[in-house]
Image 1 (cartoon, rainbow, N blue to C red):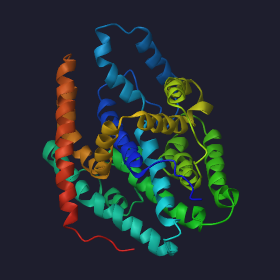
Image 2: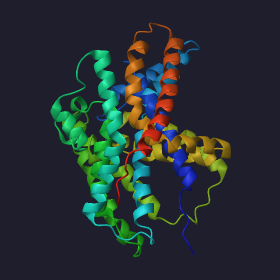
Image 3: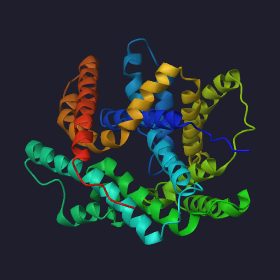
Image 4: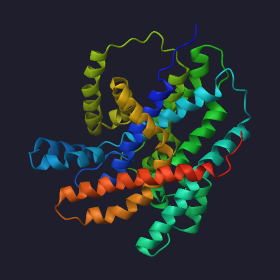
Length: 366
């Protein structure tokens, strides 16, 4: 009997669609507020208290800014993207129909795909930065490191990685290498035989994080690299290998779990130990949203998901065009929302054009 997957192809695309919308909103919003910030690369309990103080004093007038604060505080999109990367690799490369690919050919192919995707958007970011700020985007060393997907390994990645969202590309390239060298398994064998290296990777990464000072530069550096990606990526790998045919969850239980997971993501910002597991809560949260979506909404999200890679690459350039305007919009929150709406609209238009441009470029061959 054929095993059942956790996600259909459409649901997987819908998860990526929901994730990229969250990423785009978060990457714009967190520059618009100072008193509420996310615990992303380090843990500061003060961030959780600031968010709670805002929520506990919420009024009808202050609720208008609530979406900006929520998307600033909850950067859940990257967790889902990383999960789907692990999930997709297993579905593609561990299927019985796929012949085994050498580690060198696999890594080379994945790198060239990322480079082909990134290069045009990266050059666009350089142009936009030069036109707005009349200076180079970054130094030559960082440019070379970004093009080779090794920029995350440089010291002070939070300074060297420009544009900021591109840190994900270096981290996911590290996960590709780890997957092919350590986690990849041919079809067959027990679940434990196939998954014990993945479990070991996750445990080791969590242990390394737990031994760090929550606000240390070391933790920041590690979370820009594969130590961050181990948990969501590993969960994606194991979820793709599992047989979900016995999973039967009623819709009312999904509806019950949604607020629980939302609360857990908030409460985790008060505990360093719980904070490390936010990717689990975020992935489950988005998975349930997709499962509860109507067929029409799922199709819309899946359409966005099919465009998500292009959106991820081009949105930093569009963001740079409107971020300064939104910051200088004074007390007019509606003007800020107008800039956000135009930012989303132009990002989608540019992403669709970028997808057509990519079709003109030669594709790497496996």
